[in-house]
Each structure stands twice: as structure tokens, then as C-alpha cells.
Image 1 (cartoon, rainbow, N blue to C red):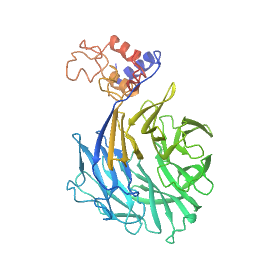
Image 2 (image 1 turned 90 degrees about the vertical axis):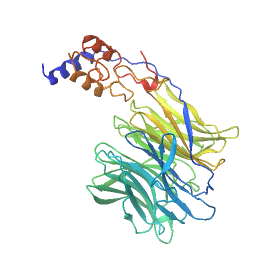
Image 3 (image 1 turned 135 degrees about the horizontal axis):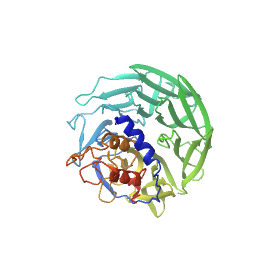
Image 4 (image 1 turned 45 degrees about the vertical axis):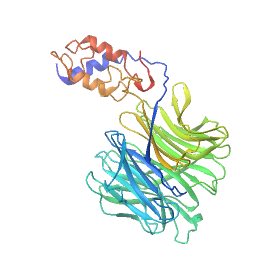
Amino acid sequence: MSRIARFDILFICFAMFFIFSNYAFALNWEIQTVEPNITLSNHTSVDIAVDSNGTGYIAYYSEPLENSGLSLYVAYTNNDTWAKLPADPNTFLSTITSYNPKACIAIDVNDHIHVVYPNNDSHLVLRTYDGSSWSGLKTIDNAGICEPYDIKTDSNSNLGIVYRRAPIDKDYSKSKIIYASYNSGNLEKNIVAQSNSFVSGSLAIDINGSAHIAYLNEVNETLIYSMCDDGNCSNETIDTVGNLDELEWGATSIAIDNNDTVHISYCDLNNFDIKHAYKTSLTFNIETVEPVGATYQWNSLVIDSCDFLHICYKRHLPAEKNLTHSYLSSSGWDSDNVDDINASGAIISLAIDAFDNLHVAYIDHELQTIQYAKATLCGDENHPSQTADIDENCVVDMRDMATFSSHWFDTGCSEPNDCGGADLDGKGSVDINDLGILSEQWLDCSILDCMP
């Protein structure tokens, strides 16, 4: 019997066994200090990305000595300690003194690290680390005062960057939101919006290479969604969000799930609530994640492999000031605390790796440190992977079925390979009993403790 025929038969067999469960989970957050005892200014920013091995990389500005200017660093986890790229802690990508800079970081499928930031002239520049050295500077935009909002890579390692450009005279009422992208090495720029004052932007790139952008219009006090495809950008108003005078960046976050649904988290300054907007068909639906009543602007959103949403933000109540993680499962929104320190979480960046581990970088102004928190969603003793989760991506899905089918009727299975992991009952062959296990656990997510 051919492998294709086996695949077809198995698909028909276990398509009859879909099982759905109720979900609930609790997270244990491991917290580390990335950069201790540094004089932090209002200019400090953090942004995090993770590589294919689940290693977190944080781009951040800090002020090593008070009034000495800001230095841009990239730090990464190394056996529970933090190192910098390059390894010499006295080196850095750039030292700048311009007002309120932000650096954005992304990692492509080849694990190359890309950092975009404003230079001393407020021009937008890019550097790439290929695993051994940093590239020279590439200028993205030198036509005005540029501030990066977000950077992402697509499945072909092409870069997308969303940023604000203001005139040299700093008349921010004449700003532009621009989407720049590299396609086979060629830089292309598209104007998303112009002739207005804009603050905060975030970017997601779908499987077709189209860009999805969420940003705030300061004049109209509105949240705007834009989609850029083949050089054309459309704009849609989602919500009125209140006075944006004191906002800068980090107030919106956007992600796309496995069904191509667009999700946006943002801070509604009318009530100081964290909200979630998601697009179904042609319209956006809006819900309140948590009626905090007093929250800072910063929030960050990711989606796990089971299409459950995770948002990190700071509660800022008189009796409760902490970094909060809220998650949306089949039963609705729930939350837990990442860090209970009084002043934690003023600036937040959240990422998720291929193993569905959550990584958070944030500022603790009370301790004057750059902090990092990690939560394991599956594969540990509290959230064990399902037996049929052969590729250990926290869900039993088509990828596991493809591996299983390629070993159908195999015999002589033994450790450590166990016929590619398809011998689910450990009895030495891949047979109908293993198919029963796969069928019973089909679409179960160990992220959410959905053990049968």
C-alpha cells in the first residue's frame, strides 16, 4: 500500500473521532533580570523576539550612566543568564541622543536577527545579525524624523516594517504612517495614512504576504485598521479610544490566527480598559478583555497554536499594580499575574515560540531593571504533551497525522525513535491500537490541560 493511500485511509478513519473538551490552565512564570541597576530614563524601550529554538532576544535602550546618552543593546538568554550581541558587554549597536527612540526586533526562519531603529539623525536604519556578525547599516528612510513601530518577517524571511515619519520641522500633524517591505532584497514603501498626527502602530503579516496594521489617529482619537496588499493600503475605523495626547507607542497589538482572523488588542482611554477587536466577515467585533478601570497604555498580543489569545498589560489600580496576562479560551477571558512588583510592566513586549512558550520583556521602574518572564504552556510536568502529539507542538493535528501515516504498519519499533514516535502504545508496531489513541486525542491541546 502506498504512503498516499495510507494517508487517505487514515484521514477518513480518524475524521470520525473529533473530541472536544473543556479547557482550563494555570501558568507558572519564571522571572529573570536582563539588565540590573541601570539608570532608566523615559526613553527606555524593550522589544522581544524568539528564534526557532525558543531563545528570547530583547532589543532595548538603556542609559549606562546618567546623562551619558542612550545605548541600544540586544540581549539573549544563555543557560538562564543573559548575554549581549556581540559578546563584549561594552559594545552596542548605536548610541543616540534623539528624543524617545524605540528599537524593534524580529527573527526570520533562518534565525537571522533584524533590528530597526532611528539613528542620530532620526533616520530609520536596519542591521542584521546572521549568527556570527552584524551587517552594516541599511537606510530604510532618511526623509524626515522616523520612529519605528513594529517589524515582522514572513515565511520567506522577507521583512516588513511599519513606522511614522514626521517632517524635519517636527510638525507631527503632518505625519505619515508608512509600511516598508523587502521583497527579494528590494525595498518598497507604501503610505498607509498621511497628513495627520498618528501614535502607536503594530504589524502582522499573513501567509500570503499581505500586511495588517493597527494604529491610532491622535486627532480623531480613533483606532484604525489597515491592510496593505500589492502596493495598495485600505483603512477602516474600528473604535473611538479617547484622548491620545500622552500616548507614544505600545498601545496597540495585532496578530492573525490559523483561520486568518485578525485580532487587535488596545487600550481604550475613555475608560482605561483593555479591549479586543476581531474581524469576522466584513466587520470588527469589540469586547472588553478586563474592565481594569486604570491601566497603562502598553499591551501586547500573541496567539498560540490552538488559536487561543494571550495579552499582557499592566493593571494600575490603587491596591493592585502588576503585570497581568489575560488569555481567551473556549470558556472566555481569564487572567493571572506575571509579576506582582508594584511598578512592573510599564513597557511590555510579548512573544510566543514554536513550542508555545510565552516570553515577556518589560521595564520595572521601581527596581530600575529590564525584566524577562517566561511561562511554559506545554511539555512540562504541569502541562504534559499528549501521547499523540508526535511533533510536540502542544496540539494533536494534521502534522502528527502525517507522521503517523508514514509509519503505518511499521514493525520492530524500539526506543529511542519508536518508529518516528508513531508507536504510541509502545508495543513495537504501528497499528489500529495506536490509531485509536491518535483518534481519541485528535485536536486536543495540552496547552490547556485538555487531557481526555
